[in-house]
Structure formats: C-alpha cells, structure tokens
Image (cartoon, rainbow, N blue to C red; front, side, top):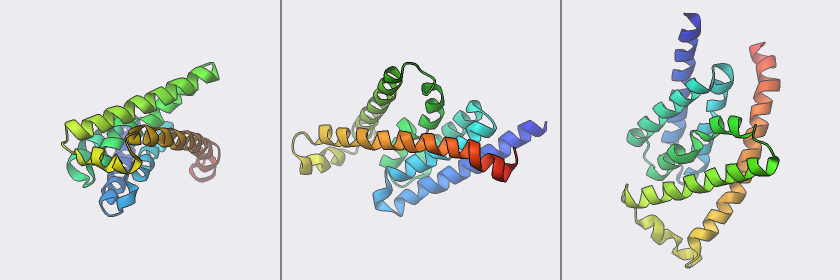
Length: 178
C-alpha cells in the first residue's frame, strides 16, 4: 500500500512541476524549446525511483493538461511529440547495440517527431504563420532549422545522459540515502 501512495504522490508532484514549467513558456517567449526539454527531464527522477510506467503516466497527464493550460501551443506540441517521452525512451534506446544503430535510431526518432509535430502544428492547430516565419532563411529554411535542431538534439541527448548519471550516482546516494 505504501508503494502505491508513493507512486501517486511522486507522480502528482512531478506532474505539477512539469505543468508549472510548461506554463512559464507564455512568460518567457524564447523558451518554446528549452522549457519543454527541461519539463521532460523532470520525468527522470520518476522513472528512476518508481519506474517507466509511472513516468509514462506522468507524461500522458502533463501532455493532456498542457493542451488546455499552456499558452504557447508550439511548446505544448514539442513536449507532446518529443520532449515528454524521450527521457523514458532514451533508457531503452541506450541499450541498443551497436553504437551506430543506437545513434541512428535516436536521430530518426527525433526527426520524425519534429517533422510530425511541425506538420500537426501547421495543419491541425491552424498555425500557418510558422511556415511564414521561416522566410528569413530562404526556401531551404525548414532544412536549415532541422539540421540545427539535430545538432542541438545531440547536445541534449548527451546532457540528458549526464543528468541521469548524476542523479543515480550522486544525488540519490547523497540526498536520498539509497
């Protein structure tokens, strides 16, 4: 019984933390990508302490609520299509061998998620001004932004791996005494 109470309490606390972070995207205009990535990283303690199933439930709850609560629709879409579930998926993807296949699968997941999120934002959410905003880069704007996104994703994946290592090997033994 105590384990279930811990799951519910920890899941609720981290859901609220993720939603507060996502709500801040409306206050900080340039954070449409950084804050969803940070909110997704908040699922790592849930995943390590309780498990991937609870982390996925937290992701689903935050994704569903962010559609209604978050003022920045693009940030909500980025959390839903990639940043919300990637920390959980990373755990499984890091087990893939060989290393080239692991990297290929990570970048394939990222590119499919970003392109589908972009298309959903334009055609389903009715935000065609996103396509017009790329006019600054010329007619290859989408390709240039996707290439830059792949570079940033590589840094994010590396940083997320270091964060997981730091949480498990330093934070948990030092502060949680486990």
